[in-house]
Length: 539
Image (cartoon, rainbow, N blue to C red; front, side, top):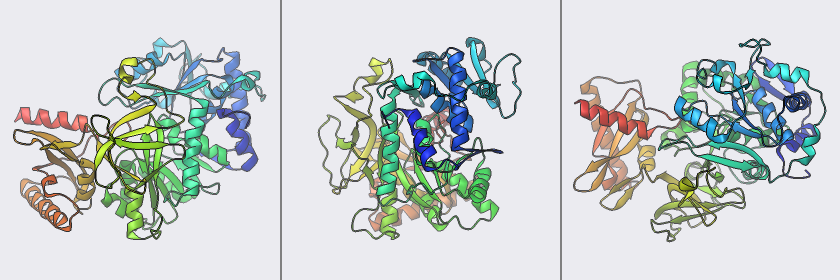
């Protein structure tokens, strides 16, 4: 690799697995065929005026089209804006304008949701499942591919690893989304760093060239946690699920021989539910890299019972990857201690530094019990949010990123992220990590999902409130009273075991039919607080 530029990754794919398949819907492409399509697409875009620094907005599900745009844009030195199609319309429009998008590439399935945006862009390409354009006179992705020459554009040799490659935005649950611009070397170092970690360390989601990959994290989120880059680097079979439901994902796993996926815990729960409904008793050999929020121990147990191995990754749009869980030295793989470590003990990636700090920025000891804010430093960390000095102030500090997450560092250097600072409960001056409480409550057989939030308290400042989505749906008042009594008795037993402090037990329980989710598939505690506040006002 001459420099760390994204399009040269495909050369590795051609070398290691030229006949390996990329599968999307009814289409199957080899890496040789994909490479030819990327060249033709790049030549067509060049002819249309796309060049160095042009910002291309892409709004698509995980498809071969999206994958091709990753590499065609790189060959021209263009900047890829991976559009979060789950954002509210106002935030979506803000991101497009803030990123300076000049071209839009939009899947036809989003035609209705982008009706307000469409008149704002003269340069528009429809990403279609068939040949026809949903808008006469507006080109499709396939038309551009068919019109181009299968030659490497001259611009490809002039792209440098320090050139910008992609821009994407945080989910904006606490305000306007914040943009982060990454260079070619940043994205490749982080993506290959994930692969390196999963290949070398004893992890549940071990990755290699013989695995069959199905990324369920959308490409708009850190390029599918780097899979759009490191899977082609391996030349491995890649199954792109598009907008598949959990039942359809399960079918792809079985029919395509998928051995590796990434997904947030909510997605894993839905996949397990689909397996229950389909009567699929075992998924042995299937590995999942999960993260985005703490993994409940009940969910981890359900995965193990199906033969699914897992690892937990920590990172985010504003820092990329930072740590992935491992089995520590001296712990027997496959033991209960090993599985618990894979849920709670993350080792920083190579070249990543992680430390804990208190509210004044002072170091917090790595003693396995003291809670502090997680600070991260890495070679790919940006200097700040894109064109947002005010939002960057106090967050990106002296080469460090202050994550806003609370964690515990163990003496062996592994990290357990227990909560977001804004989600943790500060009761009587002591932190109560809601993620730990949620993990314990998830082990109860009657709990499908749970969120613990802070409720104001005159005496203690804040106290925890548990919001529970019961397995099997909501029932009457009498059944809910029995469930609450059962949960309280269960937590009391956990306290006796020494797993929780007694003052952590929630003061109250609320039962809901369904917990709200963010655009990233995590439980939306902001929306949940608003919903509960509105309910209290209504009563």
